[in-house]
Image: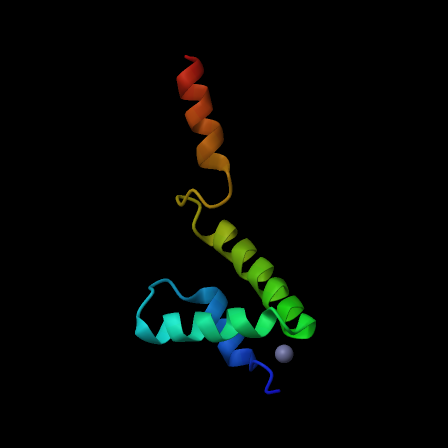
Amino acid sequence: MNHLTKEEIQQFVSFKTLDQENLKLAAKVNSHILKCDACLNAVRELQERYDSILCTQEEDTPLCGFEKEEQEETISL
Ligand SMILES: [Zn+2]
């Protein structure tokens, strides 16, 4: 069984558009991590690191849950 490469995992967690190539990659990664804990852990770890980078760099995007809090506040007024 061929494991996923670091590059593939990196691309998988960081792609922003679902073009043909990324869809193919996503299908490959998803079917592999169903059978392989080592790669599943690698994907998760990188995903977490990538998410935390996004949260610190793009504060305007509603990725970190702040947006939700603001909305609830507006509703209660
Ligand atoms: Zn693997």
